[in-house]
Image 1 (spheres, helix red, strand yellow):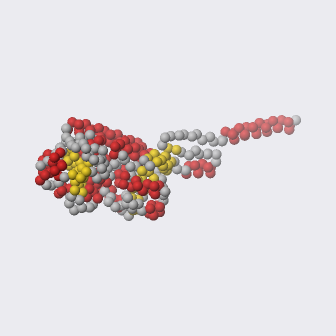
Image 2 (cartoon, rainbow, N blue to C red; image 1 turned 135 degrees about the vertical axis):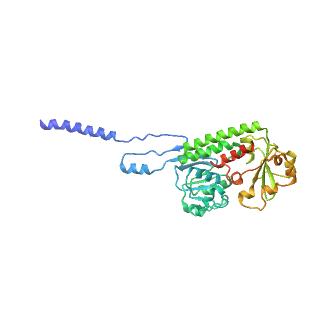
Image 3 (cartoon, rainbow, N blue to C red; image 1 turned 90 degrees about the horizontal axis):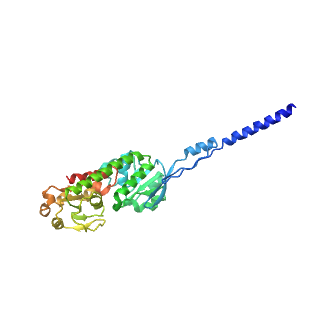
Amino acid sequence: MRYQTKRPLLSLLGLTVAILLAGCVAVTPTTQGTSATTAAVDTSGPAETESAQATPETVTITHVQGETPVVKNPETVVVFDYSLLDTLDQLGIPVAAVPQSNLPPFLAQYADPAYANAGTLFEPDYEQINALEPDLILVAGRSSGAYGELAKIAPTIDMTIDVANFLADFETNMRHIGLIFDREEEIEERLAEIEASVERVRAKAADSGQNALIVLVTGGNVTAYGPGSRFGGIIHDLLGVPPVVEDIEAATHGDAISFEFILEHDPDILFVIDRDSAIGQGTVAAQQVLDNEIIHATKAWQNDKIVYLDPAIWYLANSGLRTFPQMIAEVEAALE
């Protein structure tokens, strides 16, 4: 009789243990987003838990040359664009390597031996980059042609901006950087400030009644840039300063023009970019080139409206988190 009493108790105990064990089986929820994907984690044992915790989170970035999965908060970053380098510098995000030739003055610290020389914007040092084993490579503009080879080394994102969509592309790039490096809140604050400044300058441009011509001076020659061009897309199209000439061809180096052309169209404001100064070449400054009798006869000269824009910013790094607001400020000051 005693054995008959114990067997039901043992069966009940076994059933209870089975239920408890069944309750310990982990079910991992899956979440899906437009930009980030996190691998599902099996928490059924200590070894698996440690492995899952060591697995870095990744996000997928859509850019002009495709989609690229990127580890969040990458440790070894190589940058092939001075605007992007300016942005990371502003955010305090460390980089491992940059092209060290022709660095703008405000990024001169990256010529230090603490940073690897990644080659040039047009010709990366692939051997050096391979040795670094980077987690992320950023390219844009001048360096975008190297995307294919760089993408074979590490995840590579092309952040080239289309001047026809300058502000939208700029904001997209900044938000991608914010997502990758967990700086989304700071990025949104900065973008709100930039948007407000753009609207302020557009209003001033409309009220001032002043028109403008943009010229680039190099090697003693003068070229012009109009709407839709690399510089006109910002001053005319985005910031709303009316062009004195509508039909200047939006070519890479603008149209070749004479001093007489400037006098003939006689802009209220003459914006000048000294390319030789930007790249550290040439012996004749733009101020000297434009200091002649023909230019002296223009309204811009007589009204002190020849505006020499910061050449390093406008020519080398015109879409950085620091440099773009500085460009807006320069145009705003010219409208006073």
